[in-house]
Image (tube, rainbow, N blue to C red; front, side):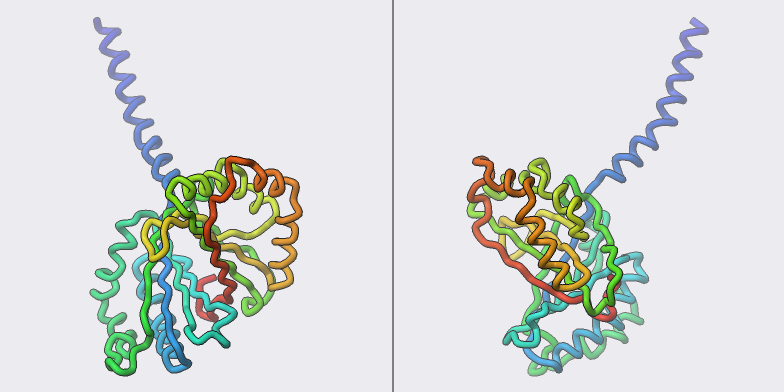
Length: 264
């Protein structure tokens, strides 16, 4: 009886010792969440206000609240486009953290003062035409964002944001499977696409769809990478498999430069 009690006590101690480790492992294995805010604007005056707001108000406030690696990107077509855009990328460990952003920054008087021009703009001189928020969840095979490893000047870097829509939810899930179990993510890694993230869109104006962001030293490097991708035996095999046919109904490709004040 005494020996049985001793064994029970030892088992209890061992189980309690390993339980926190198990929880930590589970936490590490959870996918990240992302928010992409897209500002639509027309002219240089609006762009200047947005740049000032993002650089001097929003990003410092986010850093103060332990958000890291904030990305700000501008399409290479902005110079000639009638409606121009700025993309702001924020990552977090939980969806609740993303939802808390407004509450956190608006409680900060330093942020409010720095954001005054943006927040108190006149109705007939708005800093943007509109903006949209896209909420995303990282893929199983890419549960954490990766900072790109690029050696060229920041002004030369090319970031490529792709959005793949599907005609049905079933076909969408099929395309997600193609990226994960089907081998697309692994192929991108092997070919050095320097992907920042791959993710399901949980909420946005276009659904069902997935999005991912790759990065390159410059435009020639981007073109060469895609040439290698298209010519690779792996892609030729995957793309011809019957089970993966017709799973993308619309693809949007946005080539961008990082803003000078972007974290990456």
